[in-house]
Amino acid sequence: MYKCATLITCAMLVCTNVSAADPLRHETVVLAHDAPLKKLGGKIKGDVTAEYSLTVPAGATLDLRLKSANRSAYFNVYAEGADQALFVGSRDGDHFHATATGAGGYRVQVYLMRNAARRNETARYVLEADIGAGVAGKH
Image (cartoon, rainbow, N blue to C red; front, side):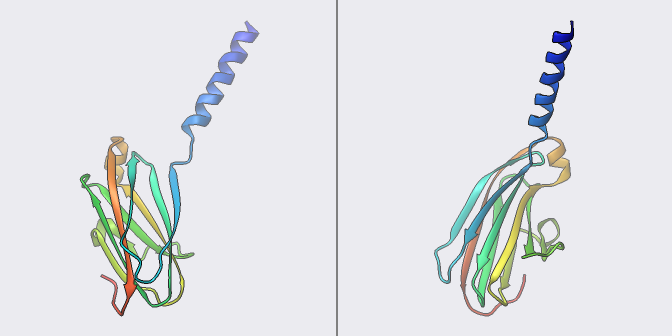
């Protein structure tokens, strides 16, 4: 009887650890001046978030555009080390454009809105990252 209870308890602990997996996928991308358009793609499902760390040279313009058939897929952009987003996709749209004032990085999160995440929807997406020289403002 005790062996059966121990076995069931162990099985429950293993299943709990599997379901508590980190819902974040992370990738680091270094972008160079006048590099060709970089397409970062993937699939998110439910509350899984894709996160990209982008390194951008000083003075470069950064263009990010999200393409997805799922209308609940969005992205946010954070300056390196910042807690507050510079760009919130659900409010600002699917296109971010800015000039890097210094060499550094941005953190980009691709996610599903809460309503779609609760329904465990899936979204395939392509995040296009284009970098070049020039002066521009944030869109």
